[in-house]
Amino acid sequence: MFCGKSLVNNFYKYKRKVWQNVIPIVQRCKGTYRPPKILFFGTDNFSLPSLQALHKNCGDRLGVVTSFKSPANCVRTYAEKEKLPLQKWPIDPSVCPQFDLGVVVSFGHLIPANIINGFPHGMINVHASLLPKWRGAAPIIYAIMKGDASTGVSIMKIEPHRFDIGDILAQREVDIKPDVFMPDLHASLASLGADLLVDTVNNLSVRLKEAKPQDSTRASYAPKITSKITEIIWSELSAFEIYTRHRALYGYKNLTTSFLGKQVQLLELRLPEKGVPVQEPGAISYLRKARSLIIGCAQQSQLEVLQLRVEGRKPMSAQDFNNGFLKQARSLSFTENKLASI
Image (tube, rainbow, N blue to C red; front, side, top):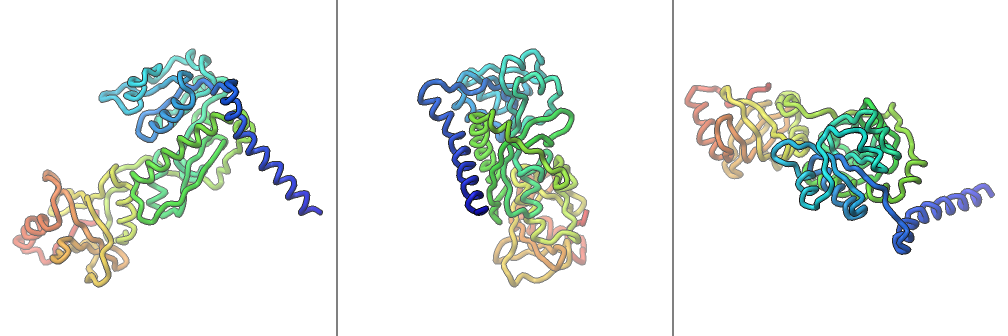
């Protein structure tokens, strides 16, 4: 009997959820639906898909706030092209009551309380993780770097004084492919976030009513990336950890080490096939058949480097590095060719 009641309750709960999503569509067909008037805050290419989706959904009921630094960012360029009302950050709080809702996507500024409270429905944010996991500025990078099997996007309410602590309105999860590079996951999550944002806006009253607080005891943090994360300590990191970090930072920052007193950026790397001779951490050899460098890492693992850039030089192949810098090291009577463990 209990099981039957549970099934009935779940059925009606599901039916109610479906109807909540259908209502805006029915209202559109009848010509009675009007999306909320939105003021959008964003600056970069993670913001842009959300702005484009809101523009398609809301039409002229949309304004944009962004930075006016030179050169113009993609959000400003789109707003100017589409002739959307555009404002420079910081804005006058008196503007907020002219809109129903503020939407923030990858904006990079802490929004003051008088701005948040100036909107009748407050402000919401698209965040590129399944909060409370990876609060902070670099959630996509940390998700890859720490080997997460999945991630996603969250729509949350913005609260004053702190980032990423607000109640959750909606979430969607995606798997992280084991060989994914950051730009690909970044693009996927930007698109997913835009879709979820429109769904949330079109069901705003329901989503706000059903918003759930975050469990801060489960929170983890993804702080802003510094140069320290890019520096390789060959004796501490395995080849797999270094390659994972390379995929996480790809297109944003290059991993670095040093050789003969010069900084070296590693531009293209991979995990070698089996049968490569084991070397001590930081030791370099040239694999002539593959035209690549083999570098020893922690846990008796090896990393293969195909392209790099030496300080003051243009990017070069592993073969050019071998013919130039490694030969120079040998001529200086180095007993071993070794990268510095910074």
